[in-house]
Image (cartoon, rainbow, N blue to C red):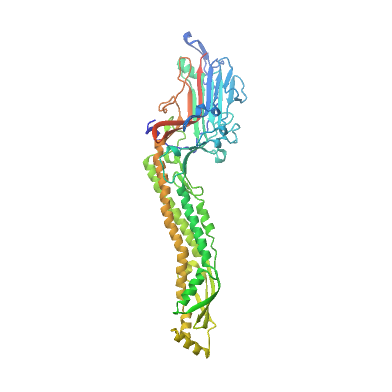
Length: 579
């Protein structure tokens, strides 16, 4: 496949509800039901209303093709369901042990559900398709056929019930859909820094084809135009996405978690009788008077109402949703909804290939960057608000001594929000007690002057007026130990957002070169992908009418011409052959 052909990317999130695959002959109401032709055809009369003896073939194939070097058609666990109903009315199912769904001759119905749990394909996980679902008695990965000697044929596969009806629709609840299958395409991409794995996620698929073979033969051999279409094909794809495991996403949440741990450590270091707040205030008080010694600080310092882990927890589990992508912070992934980026695919024309162009990629990466920046701002704002709203309570007593004398007990108090302290709207109260009086003051003053200190009264006045200085020291300490760490986190998150955007951009830019997505694949219709085959009509038989819900073309990046493909959900009806 050429690179241009591989440029299609798409995903579906819903599809039409296909009508049950039972068919009635469209020519039964004609007045003249006998149509005569040259005996060289081997039959002279075809009567669609009188149980014509025709051979019909039908097929349901859930998974086929070549996937990452594995020939899926050769896997025994991938046996499809084929049914031949001979012109004598004998049904020949293949495999022979297929489930008979209550065949009532002349109509026969068989199924062969796919055993996805038995598959062992490296890099592929299809087990999500195997769950039992309401209305899908045979499982989500079913393969179903129906046929009769009257020329009716129908084949279906995928998320269908035991009547062949497609269960994928726009209104199907997510709870009724199986988990997606995943295909690891990491090896197909060029090396992308910060990318651990890239996986395509294929949601529920279904396809069905039905054929009124008798009416088709009347048209084809006798030239009698049918009153209704002789063939009807429907398909459904519930979703196609891209999941990128990117350590860069984990680095964002990791930075937040690390900062929270540092903040918790800082808070623990600030509080208590011997914490940084206590020592800082005591030292600031001592420095108010040169060579003044302050010893024996007692009391308490607490910070309450601050739960940093709870503050950030909601942000760490977010799914940041953009237009067609999601940054899954909880699991360290980037999820891309390919349908949102390329347009809807339900109801698409046959052989529709969807394209992801450069303009879309540029818009996505720009939006991802803005989304991550906004998230970082929200995280830092929340942390900053939590810190500012936390309550700080200080009740310390600092015993001041000099020249061998106790000069005073200085009580420092404050009860306010941290934000009020930082903003200068709260002060540290200073109250002195135990100041010497009487004749001893003269002796103390002489001792103080002898060592170059002011008199006791001057020192007391200085200490009493220390509130603003202590408040400034406290505000600076709280800013440095707490709020500045939040500011640093904002810078860190900004720098770590860039690798996340780079991973997304590089993968999306490379993806069109390695993955092609086509829906409603009909091999007999113009525009079918390379390698499509079907049984063509002959003078005695109709064509095969097949439809595949989803075709993925995969190319090795190192060898672009080496293309593999996988077909999800194929239903085929026909050929129907004259006896």
